[in-house]
Length: 331
Image (cartoon, rainbow, N blue to C red):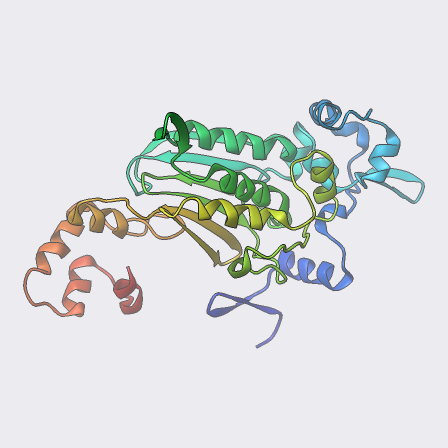
């Protein structure tokens, strides 16, 4: 085969210019967020909201020395230029022009499929504020109950919120910002909460060993900034926090997937119950990424009624107007 190919799932795909550039950065041990933006001046970039946030969280004044120290700007041939990280931490026109996809899409769906929205929101400001906005959206759409222990009443969220907070922070700080057209998605269904982030899992991180303190950085400028702001630490405690809180939630199952060039985590309710016919109809219309792949409810009813009598898979495929045998059998 001519050209450069990458492994995605079980297939080989041609690598586009973005992927080839990413591989070259890995070879040179540099990160996308540290690269210079040559056609924009610092005066073009709106950093005021981030400056206020930075001072509030760190107590430090916003100076040129801080910008240099954090590598938000660098000298280049006598000019002081912003890095990609600087633009990502900004608000306004330049960020929207260069990184319109550096945002989080939120959705609360009715039921367990993505047919009907109960609420939607987009957060596309500076990335330092996005994780908190995502967390607040989640808290608005999950339940908090009360349990009695002895003479005390204790409140308890239906999901492990500390684990979810860490997963959201990881999604923002470790996503691959070089992948154009891909954003973070947070989806809440009746039976699960799902977070999807652009970029595969870093090779040195193993989600099967979450109790081990693991640390690796994709965005070498953004991560230290987030550490200064107290959003993350760099000691590999994030995954361990998730693992520890999940132990207190045996009713929640935690899953993770690499799907194409995306990484996804799911928090699923083990005890969620739905009547059998509704469950088949809902699941037929949703894959693991929350994307509708199925047919109408009427067609689902047809295939279910067809299953009441002996039928070959080819007959069922004809009824459902499907051609791919493997895909039909799986879904």
